[in-house]
Length: 72
Image 1 (cartoon, rainbow, N blue to C red):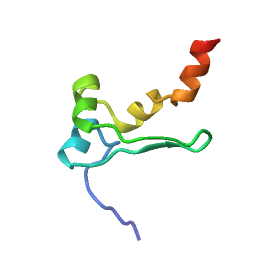
Image 2 (image 1 turned 180 degrees about the vertical axis):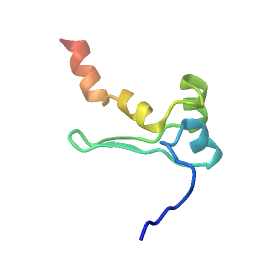
Image 3 (image 1 turned 180 degrees about the horizontal axis):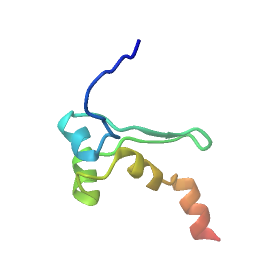
């Protein structure tokens, strides 16, 4: 049996969709126990509504890593 959920293909969630859905975005780095829960409204104003959540997550860097880069 071929099971189709929907005729249209869905892509990754965008920041605009997360804002409309009132979703909470939480990023957690296990290695350094760094956690952030940014304001989605602020993310949309900085990066635009069309940026995907996956692309936003790729830009994240833990504070500890940034501090090491600055101190070197």
